[in-house]
Image (cartoon, rainbow, N blue to C red; front, side, top):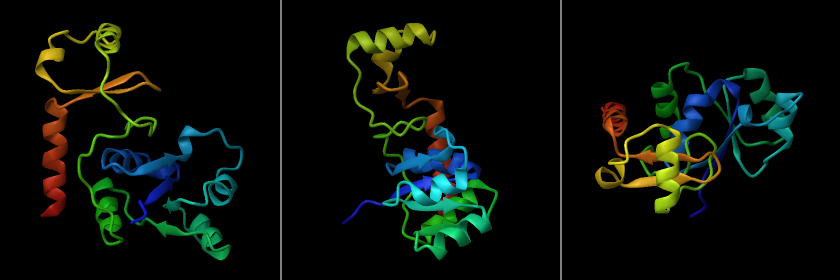
Length: 159
C-alpha cells in the first residue's frame, strides 16, 4: 500500500498539524518561502495530494491533472471529516513532528536534559513520560494533558 502524502495551502495549517500527528507526510506551504504560492503549490511536490480551500487554485490544479481535494469547511474537525471520506485515518501516531514534519525519535539523555532546560520544563519529566524528539526544531513531545485532549477530540470526531 502506498502511503498518502499531502501538501496543504496556507488556509489549512491546523489540518496539516493533525495529518502530521496522524503519521502522514504532510508539507505546509507556510513552511516555504514562495513568491507565487499558487504556482508553487501546483508545480512542486507533484507526488503529493494537494489540499486547498481555494476554489481557483483547485480548478487550476485539476486543469493540469494535479491531484487535489477542495476542502470546504473552515472548522478543522469538519475538514478532518471531509478527508475521512477519502480514506484518511486520524489517530495519534507520534512519528512526525507536528511543527516541521521531520521524523521523531527517542532523545538521548543529553538531548532531553538540554531541551528540558532550554524550555524550562521539569527534569522529572524524564521519569514521568515517554519522550519523543525532533532534532530539526529541537522540540520534545510527551503524553501529557494535551494528549488527553487530543484523544478526546478524536473520539468526538468518531461520534
